[in-house]
Amino acid sequence: MSDDEMDSRIWRIRRADRETSKLLLRPGNLVGPSFEPGPELRDDLGEYARVLVVGVGGLGCELLKDLALSGFKNLDIIDMDRIEVTHLNRQFLLRLEDVGKPKAEVAAKRVMERVSDGNIVPHFCRIEDKELDFYSDFNIIVLGLDSIEARSYINAVACSFLEYDADDNPKEETMKPMVDGGTEGFQGHARVILPGLKPCYECTIWLFPPQKKPRTVAHCIEYAHLIKWDEVHRGKAFDPDELKHMEWVYREANKRAELFGIPGVTYSLTQGVVKNIIPAIASTNAIISAAYALETLKIA
Image 1 (tube, helix red, strand yellow):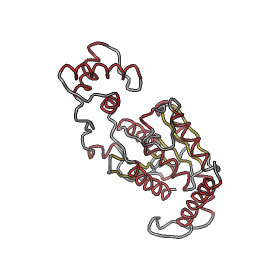
Image 2: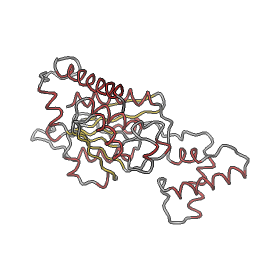
Image 3: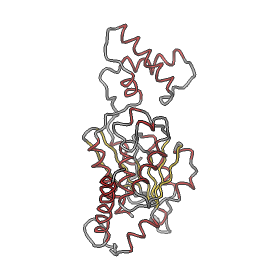
Image 4: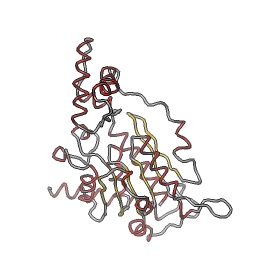
């Protein structure tokens, strides 16, 4: 690393420190009436706040960087995926030489290279593999997910910790705040879920529009994926993360496309249709991640 690159990195980190300090040293419309500004808050944020980031995709990579630069020192990340070439265009913490490695481990390493006083603990596993005690250790859960099923699971876990007093009011100390959201093309959103005070994820799931496949020539791939696979592999579950399974669907989709004279079936397209991958825009991820980080800071 050159001296200029090091100076630039130090300048960015110091600037982030100054901006966070401004929020913690004065009252304003971003905080509640009980907020008491003071210089000790910056140290408290780093020492006491424990944040779990779930998912290290295009949004999750931005989140991890933003939270670390906002003063959160104790961060954990959990993700079950290994790095693929198709991830590199939108997940800026990952490099070509990282292909095949666990996302969580690489992302944690990259951020700690730039924010040296942070402690980021990666967990390369499924969210269901962790015991409830694991989730109970965190003050805030931040979701960088693209799956409704995964969001529903974390929502159920967070709500399971909630307790009520004799007057049926939620006990604040048992509340597990969540920051949720997502991006799609140029669109995105971030929202705060406070179990017991605000509607949880399941309460508002009906507001989501039906999921659409992002490709217009997907019928050959869907035929191979949803129909042909079951005909040939009776009783064997299809695993979208298994390379051999995806290659089989790609070959069968190509055969059907050739039979009907339909061009355009590629391996990348096959992945996009089967995994419901929606093209990501880096700028959108960055903007929504900034909103996530600000909401997390306000909660803390």
